[in-house]
Length: 425
Image (cartoon, rainbow, N blue to C red):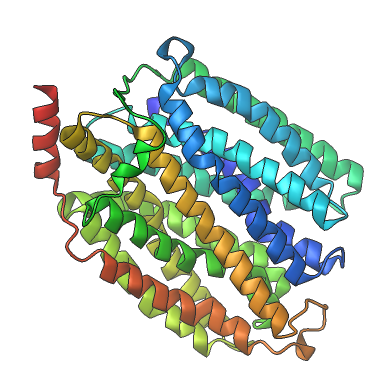
């Protein structure tokens, strides 16, 4: 039950994130409200605005007095504000300035939730394998939330009016608030953070030359872009290459379901090998299989479904293992420096994660716009060559770069346990 109480918040968070990352940008473009190039630039700018908030929120989260709940107070304050902005975004902004304002607020408030939330999970245990379990349960709830975001509107809303959509959104908001209250009341928040002489300026000392953290964060950056590109372009690819727009929802459900089902597999492999070995194995297989997308056209639906299933299973490793590896490095940092500063670690992690999404939207939408790719409902008039290369070839190449960066990264379970034993002494 303790895992459920912690992981459940990922469920509603994933629903809102999927709508923002996958559906809202293409939907705005297809409504003719803004051009595809402007939409890409607006979301890229909103992400850049948000990156400034990450180190600050991570630092302040670590500095928050323990008596208020170092992490839970951030959830309590930020969740209601986040849900209000989400409701305003569902109304669909009519100008680029309005969209930029709401998107920036949404991202910043999301940061004020996610960084304390992820950090909280890293403080619930000090065991090498337990880190993977806490991360995985959060990931699985998030994937189930993504699936729900695809299925529930279809089941609940039949030919919906604007009023129906708003009422459904209000029900989602009420549920999200109740989940946040459950987390606040049921999960212990009493971990001690050591930060003697620590300031937001000295936070960047974690970027030490040749450190394991540098390898992990840089690898996470390139692999994150590789994953974000297909996610951003999925609706376009299924619509204009496969020419089966009615399959967007079912295929996304299949992908997320495979990722969720794969979590126990990656936990077992990370215990048998190591987290980094299991992750590199998954990235290698995914990069090879992704090249098969280059062979996909409207007659290759079975091939695309097979690739979706396989890459979904590999995505489970991307979601479960790197964050668990980051929790290990927080212990290494405490052992080497005497400071325990998980908030700033997860803040930098969050910044990089956001940059990957920003680059994916900004680069892909800008290139497609320059290639005169505009969603128009008549897929036979659209040149999809560049779209296919962005969807398949570039992600495969970026995953290979990520694998190369991880060469020399070694932190076994035994080595981590020795660090924990010395810290306890």
